[in-house]
Structure formats: structure tokens, C-alpha cells
Length: 87
Image 1 (cartoon, rainbow, N blue to C red):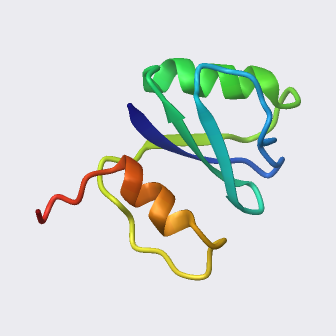
Image 2 (image 1 turned 45 degrees about the vertical axis):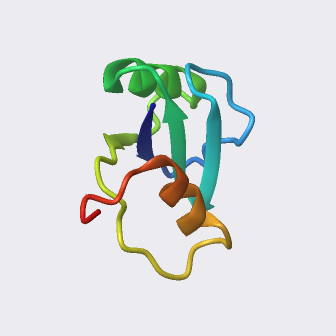
């Protein structure tokens, strides 16, 4: 299962329907998505769920990012889904 990082100036709703098992809002306009689908499908499903013309950025996370100041539990959520390459 992959983890994707999505950004849009329009918030990605936590309950948006798509080919993902979970959406986790982590900041204004920034969300993590867990999905078995490929990047293209995740991108297009999000694009179609947002208002037409809304900017959108979606990228797979292949390593756990360094982060600070995000909602409680974000690091644990990522740790549970993305293996540490140093181990």
C-alpha cells in the first residue's frame, strides 16, 4: 500500500470518496492518502473531487519525511505505513 502527499489550496475533505483507505489532513490544504491505486488514479480521483480549475499536487512518499509541528499522531501514522530505510 502506498502513501501519497496531496496539496491543494482547497482542503481535501477527510471523507472524500476515492481509491484510498484513508485520508489524513495534516495542514491547510495538505493531506496524506493511503491507497493501493497508482499515482495517476489517485491524482485524477482527487482532481475530480475538487472544484474545477483547483490547483493540485500529488506525489508518492517512498520514505518517511522529516516533519515538525503537524497534528499529533502524524509521525506514528507515517511510521506505521512507510518502512524506515535505515533498518
